Amino acid sequence: MKLIVCIKQVPATESKLAMTRDGTDIERAGLTFVVNPYDEFAVEEALQIRERLGSGDVTVLSLRSHAVQNPEQALRTCLAMGADRAILLSDPAFDGGDNYTTALVLAAALRRLSFDLLLFGKQAVDDDDGAVGIQVAELLGIPHVAVVNKLEVDRQNKTVVAHRQIEGGIEVVEAPLPALITCQKGLNEPRYPSLPGIMNAKQRLLEVWNRETIEIASEAVGSGGAELKLVRLEPPPPRPIGRIIPDDAAAAVQELVRLLHEEAKVI
Image (cartoon, rainbow, N blue to C red):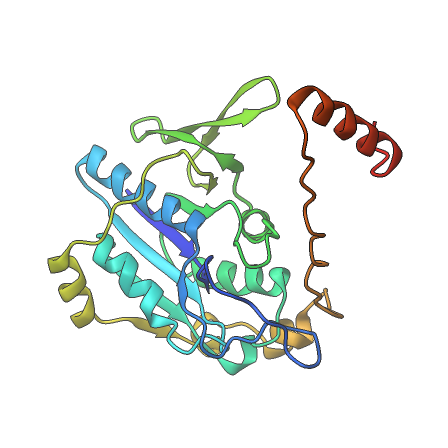
């Protein structure tokens, strides 16, 4: 079975973020970048499917953001986990795009590859759009199931059965292969790369594909093809200082209720 995982490199979640002077981006200099946490679930699921079936290969694919100084690191992390092949999509023409142009580039690259199952994280933690994977499936004309936390693959019947949580229960969806799945927390527990895997990944060849490789027009991607324009980023307002209500428990509860009613006006 041929499995492809699309990943994104994002700032580490513990990073302290600051805005650029023009307010259109975060200041990326000095940030630590990692594999998007939801994409780690996708990589782990691909590896587990290969192990359960006893055969297959796992390819990881990533679109370079030129703001990331070392985009190869995320792909090498996936190779260290056990992926078989890594492809980096890198071209200045891709700069300044949105989720739609990202999907266009990924879909163009995927058309050049053979696959049975595509796996994405449900969203990237930097922009929380959650749109790219679904748009890729639509562009490729294949079925998709989003926010999956349990996945069963039937290679003989060429189907997948995906489970996802909905309000009040579990939704079970069956889809024919090839299909696209976006992965949610709880699907698995991503493994840590082993030391031999890390050392081996440092020596592995990364394939680099540009715009000409995937045969996509420059005006269709990047800032020229983007449908969305980011006007401004602003940090959330500072949280007000908390208030401590002294006194015994009974009196404190009464005062708390009064404050919630008269000042906060939430009850």
